[in-house]
Length: 108
Image 1 (tube, helix red, strand yellow):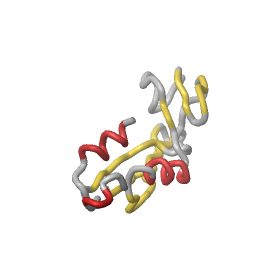
Image 2 (cartoon, helix red, strand yellow):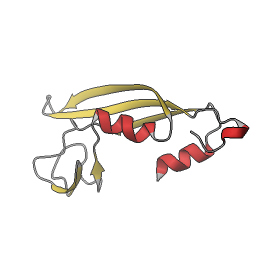
Image 3 (cartoon, one colour):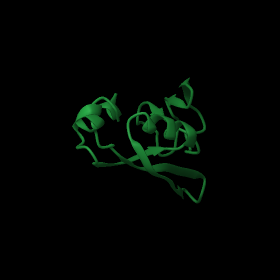
């Protein structure tokens, strides 16, 4: 998993910045659903031709990133294109790797 590898290489106390699509992202008029908020073969919009698209809601983002890091902030950036018909929505996440003390090496 990507977050696990980032945690491994990030220095103790280091900061990590991430952007990921929210569950409010426009995913085309037609698409195939692979699983919960997972789509492919998207017909139109900003994700057309990009392969698999995974979206995430706020609680899922906090839970996922919180498994590996201290989440310092979780904000949303949104804009539209094509006269407002297609919303682009991303989570802006800032995390910190907690400092591990020698006696507690296996904690976050």
